[in-house]
Amino acid sequence: MSALPAFLDTVTGVSAEQIQGILSAARRYLAMDVGFISEFTQGDRIYRFTDSGGGGSPVKVGASDPLEVTLCHQVAQGFIPGLLADTRENARAVELSSAYSFPVGALLSVPLRHPDGTPFGSLCCFSYEPRHSLNEQHLSVLNMCADVVCVVLEQERRAAAELVARRTRIRRVIEDDAIEMVFQPLYRVEDGWLTGFEALARFPQDPTRRVDSWFTEAAEVGLGLDLEFLAVRKALDALPALNEALKLTINLSPGAIVSPRFGPALADVPVNRIVVEMTEHAVVDCYDTLRQALAPYRERGLRLAIDDVGAGHSTFRHILDLSPELIKLDRTLIHNLHRDTARRALAEALTMYGRRIGCEVVAEGVEVEEELAVIRTLGMTRVQGYLLGRPMPLAQALELPPVRG
Image (cartoon, rainbow, N blue to C red; front, side):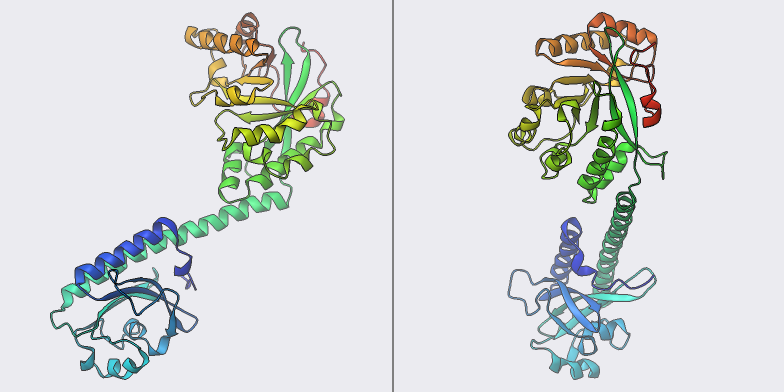
């Protein structure tokens, strides 16, 4: 394994707290005056963590010394033993002592090593006065602490490498425009008329991976908006080809809607043909901000749909605070609607509620004629699902007749 230059200074959060805790516990147990963790990089020893029990410490995080004059590097190279009860008794330690502006009377030092054994730093504790009570057991304790620090750092390294890999994967999709859009039809329940399509993203380079996991990962690596607006752009590219009477539904997160990129994305679009769909379980930081971002477009005819209503995680907060034009009942509620009286009762109650507040009620995930028959009796206004049409390429969508046969 290759060395990892300047790695310790990138450790933050929980890992940094763990390392600081290990260092403090080791120093207290060993009853030493100062403890520190340093990194060897580019010919220097750099202090990354220090502990002195609340007292003034002569070593400061970020300070550095040339490697060749440091006791810790000499220990890592095998030139000085890791336990010096009295540094005055070791000739090389005496020779190097002039490089220090503080006294080192006793020293316990163990290298921090990569899995291949390469030293990249050290865990050290020292006292200002000699400590003849120090023994190999104390050094073993420090070695154990160093092993734990290395485990934490290796986990951090792997997490960092994984983050780079995930970010690279998402960035490649964005840079290559590697999203394909498919279009699932929505029909009016009353007469079977085609009313529009929902644009859905597909990732051809890994078709077995869930679509939502791509967007989740993009958000986790700081590229969520880039991926969302790539999908939006590619969806809106299809709008001119669709009949002007049809609506196009695009999916956006609350963060995307309130971002500065929302307006430009709709700048040259007839927004009265657009439905913005937002999932019911999306976190909204501020409803006022979200309403304000949507308001000028809704005034021009843009419609808002809340998805996944009736799923187990639904709170109905979005419906109450955003007053959408459409509520889309989750497919888990629609599945086996004709056989499950509890599902039917809940679907009926939500449909009645939606109609009372002036919402279109859309049934998602309809797969069999029996479900559709119940939907008709409950008064839902729109329907979508595999029974009526799977997500399809634009060319195929354009060939659909205006009325479902």
